[in-house]
Image 1 (tube, rainbow, N blue to C red):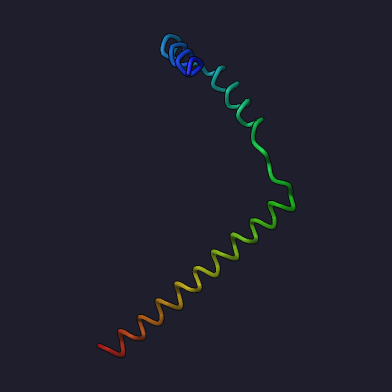
Image 2: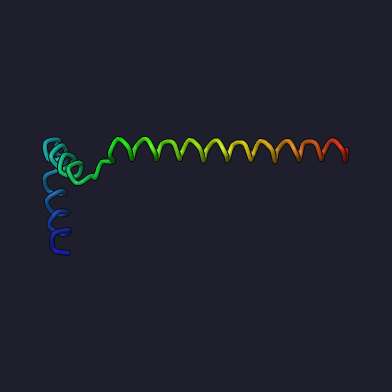
Length: 73
């Protein structure tokens, strides 16, 4: 808790500093675990597949209800 309180005190007294912001951003980006090329490709394929399947299912359900509404009315 002391670090958080110290950081709040430093921020409020000094204001916004672009150099500190860029350094903090670089430090946080260094902590990121970037995916490998193979992992990126396979996960992108999985997302595209799921979006396509979901859109197809919604399309089919919509057509079914449209057909059912025409039969009733």
